[in-house]
Amino acid sequence: MMDDRIELHNLLLFASQRLTIAFQQQEQSSADPAVRLAVSQGSILRSPATSETIAAAEERLGIDLPADYKSFLQFSNGMVIPMIDGHVAELLRVEAIKPFSCADAHAFALWNDQGSQEVFTPLSQIPGDLVCFQENLPDVRLLTDAVLISDVVNSGGVLLCPFKSFGPDAFEIWELEPWAGCVRYRNFADFLRERIRASLGEWT
Image (tube, rainbow, N blue to C red; front, side, top):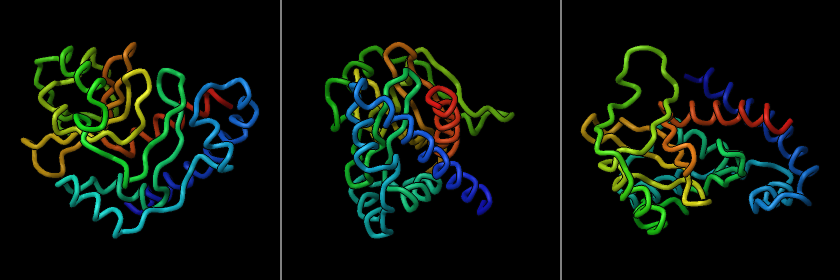
């Protein structure tokens, strides 16, 4: 577990160096506010969140955040990250994350109205090493409890989705994009690895 954490932190540091340089080269032609944020900071990463700040967010949301997400927050409280559709998004500070239904009523209504009635089984419960899976639409039953952990661009964003019927530790990360549908990741660490590796290939 500690080796995985160190590996992910090293990947984040490497990605920050490479992507910040790429963003600096394209800042003038980019319309993404997150690109300008990374350039102004000189990094895609942020200062760590304190344990007290994370605990306050958990109390506010009424959930225990997943361990891998908390480990990320204690390393970098949010970050700038390229998404699957090519735009650059901001993973929010833990102080700013909110239930999806409250954070952006328009985006929530859009996905909720068009969502699937199919009941999803957590990827962690599916035999094998499936890291991510693309669905046409999200399971609407889970949207109400989903927490928005990114900014919203074109009604898309990154959600932390609890599967309450499978226990308090059952979470997935969903990347909602209007053209791509719902991309499900087994956990937050897998989401970060997949997005960073794809981003390095696309941007550097």
